[in-house]
Length: 375
Image 1 (cartoon, rainbow, N blue to C red):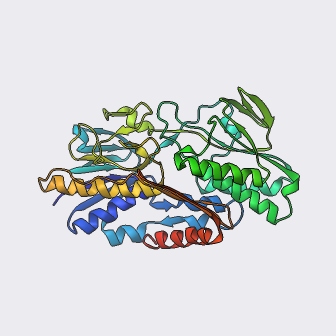
Image 2 (cartoon, rainbow, N blue to C red):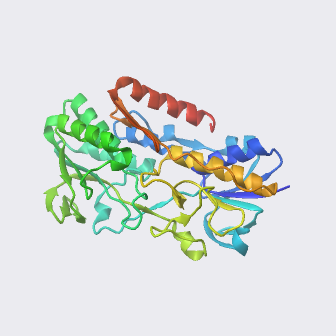
Image 3 (cartoon, one colour):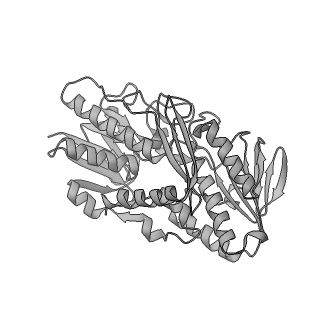
């Protein structure tokens, strides 16, 4: 019986578990993660405006682990030895015949004064804090922004910031509070949202203009203060700052010999195998993968990579050469709380469908259906 260790409990990790169990009912699966729960981050955009409560998006995984016959280890990975055949954790060591690293990435929180900002993808606790701060404010300036990893342009996640921006603006308008707030969107990029495609950039900028959202684009960020955003192109007051920095690899990667990309991610080939490592794979935000410059860091991509990684691991167990690649595909609905803009991008197409109420409900239906498999 083969033993596979999965590190993580997010989108890529749980998809890896489901794919492993579907492929082989007898394989021993060990999963390492600090908490036995799954956080559905795409839904956190609705917490600040009351469409979701934190408990709606945190799914205990005990039942899922029982159904999938997973040995859960409540621990944090700290390193590897023997070419990945042993995972070192803060609770001991785990041996394996195959390893899938799917523990996500880490946000680069080095900007001076970044503690004065809220991290939109910082978890349900942070988005609840955003909700509470909004409730306290009677007016003022709300600042929404993101940046990237200068050493790896693909290591960024700007899409959710647009959704927090439009969702909160819609909520303020609906509650008759919009006139009391100035809203500013900022980023060092001159054309924000380029990874979504040229048509999407135009659509996003039109939407901001229509809603009276100001922009501060193309200026390198210098620092945040308690009531201010400071860039090389000037500064502006801010009573609340939501900011998504670029991403890099997890800190425990530094204590391994795993090959790293310029941005600090684990280098993988088109089969999601870690370069030069036998039966060691990576999926999701932990990895740096070959593909187009717009290859997204998003849940959909993580799921595709996890499935490819598992299928290639099973081939390796059977003595077959790797053959399963993943589609370079971006699919998202940029939600505004009551409607949404559909964006899809592949190597051949870039589709952008304008804001439509049906897309908002499609996003909510997808959430319900996705979480159902883990409840």
